[in-house]
Image 1 (cartoon, rainbow, N blue to C red):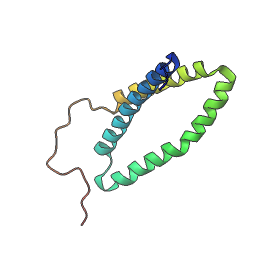
Image 2: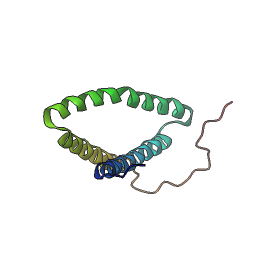
Image 3: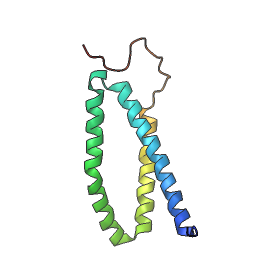
Length: 113
């Protein structure tokens, strides 16, 4: 086992921030979908959402590579983190209900007939 360096700790810290933001974002998306998508379409909409997200990731990586080469990795990473935080906060504010939603008596999952 080697000694943990400052670089390793900073990478772990950056990863933990990313995971925390991703957890919040995924929770917002799932909650929004469960509230607004009809139960019969929930699986299809979730799969489409995941597919679009996974297919656009390489495009974002390519753009980040070009921006990183032009401006440096640090400023680009800081800008991306800032945009992620702003978008997550805006989505949280826009997607959460103004009043608490009362649970209904009907199930929220699709049933086969």
